[in-house]
Image 1: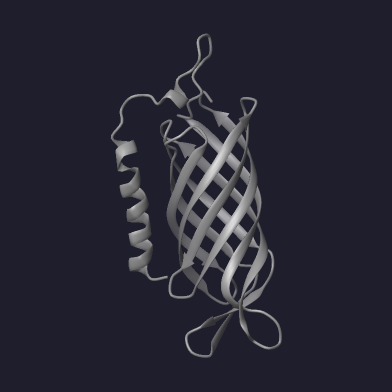
Image 2 (image 1 turned 180 degrees about the horizontal axis):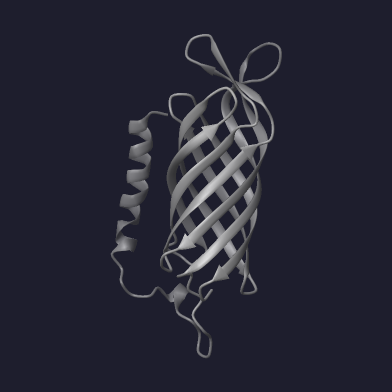
Length: 195
């Protein structure tokens, strides 16, 4: 995926969210019922541990060298700080816990041994349970460090006042190398704020 394609994907997500950004009223999903306190996220720190699978497109599997898609297990550790009830900034880290080989260019192979992705992200939460993720970072492995773009969507629900469980679908583009999409399940701990 090229830089231009990555930028176009992020721009499309932000443009689609423009009507939501223009609203200054509190949405019905964020209005507390009578006698309840607000469930806003402003000022909240969130630490997340996730277990997932990344589907690496056109990686090489087996002795025949045939290009195939692989599903590889991964662990995630993320940190977010909520600037408002709808916006957060954070750092997402992910390690694929297997090695794999990708084809880069004509006949050139690139091995990725336990790559670690670190991305700075912005999170937009227009609805009570759904959030959109977008950001840039790097994927580091012993062989080479690659620039990456991450976009995704997350569904989360609170368990009590300080815990959240969720599922996220992400698309990671390692510029000019390979793409992967992932699905992960997570548990988060919330600190501070008035969640």
